Image 1 (cartoon, helix red, strand yellow):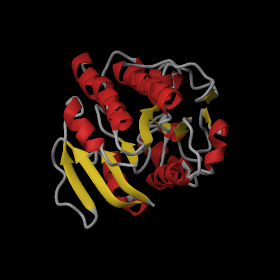
Image 2 (cartoon, rainbow, N blue to C red):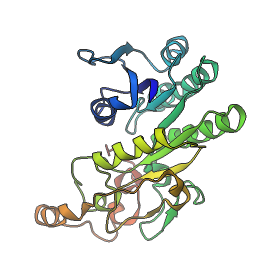
Image 3 (spheres, rainbow, N blue to C red):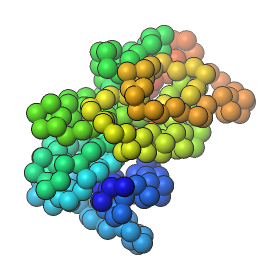
Image 4 (tube, rainbow, N blue to C red):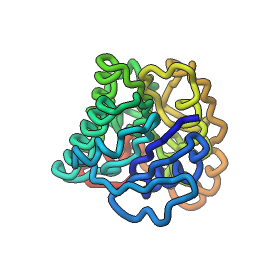
Length: 267
């Protein structure tokens, strides 16, 4: 069991799931966001922090032997916003980890959008396939993965960079049938990341056991994570509610879907 687990972005959709379901990993859970954290749970500490505030981030990280980093800008946005939250914020987090009195193990919430411009006909491996980011948000996640690697090689800080797919209760488009990640599978992955004896610095896709997927996680097989859920349970409902995209539309061509257009979308 960890002594103290930090969950950043704990008021977001994924951070909230981690807060609700991963408290058993640590004696104390430090939950952080800029606002809207509600009341502290029995083993929780509340910390309000802007990720671009270096001193505040370093104080937040101190004493944490585990970090689930869900904080930052979660969708496409202006360069100023992405830079502050996802570039400066990521650097501040890792500098805090380097300076901390304990050496934390980190789960970094990267994104499948770092390879969004690959076509849906491609089969990718996170460790060997080239990045093809589909926006500024995705570029910031590429930076985050590189930063995590450097801090591992230079300072020994272990990180799993998880390229999260589409983690929603159910897929909302035909493209998401391939990228969908269930909450149960995400929780199981986080448990393995903090329980495996040696983590290292793997990069892998956070995706459920869908019938059609574009990603191969074989290089991270040593984690012992086997997703159990599949998006197929939603196919008939999705087919009844909407028509699949045309073959020449971004949602049918690119793994990043509409993020590969010049329109800002949430995913």
